Length: 192
Image 1 (tube, rainbow, N blue to C red):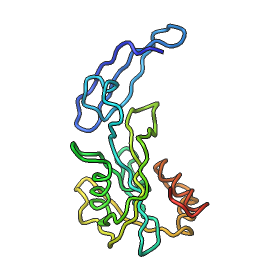
Image 2 (cartoon, rainbow, N blue to C red; image 1 turned 30 degrees about the horizontal axis):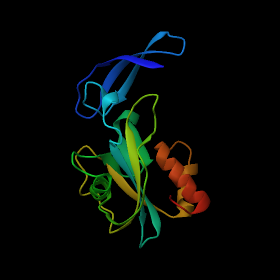
Image 3 (spheres, rainbow, N blue to C red; image 1 turned 90 degrees about the horizontal axis):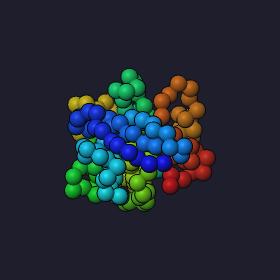
């Protein structure tokens, strides 16, 4: 497999489309289109280890519950259950971004970082976007007063039993990473 050419198709702020021409194992020339968070003309040339976004998996210490959010997602034309998440700003570390996003989306404050994943990819057939999972303990009272105008978020705290009920409910939409963590929490009582 060999990448032959890459062309930036769009020029948007948060997400762009790229067309790649490549040769397969049989030396056939093929084309692929994918989305990227990169603003570079060639996102494949970016520095290794750069993380696009963070997904925060918060466990509320006082309530002894896992914190999730129910958020309106434009591409789904409805709500999705997931964890607080967001893009990492220039100069920000993954942990700094995670603390900021948790506060902005839930009003809760990180009290302890439990675990940080390496950059991981959730849909590499469609995008080169990567994220790091940040597992934390948090405190405070849930609030959506710090949400941006483009965000519609409901904060939900779940016991193991409540998590089991929500992931079994037909018709609900879940972020893949969130469903997996919720399933582990239900089955084993652990989040990481």
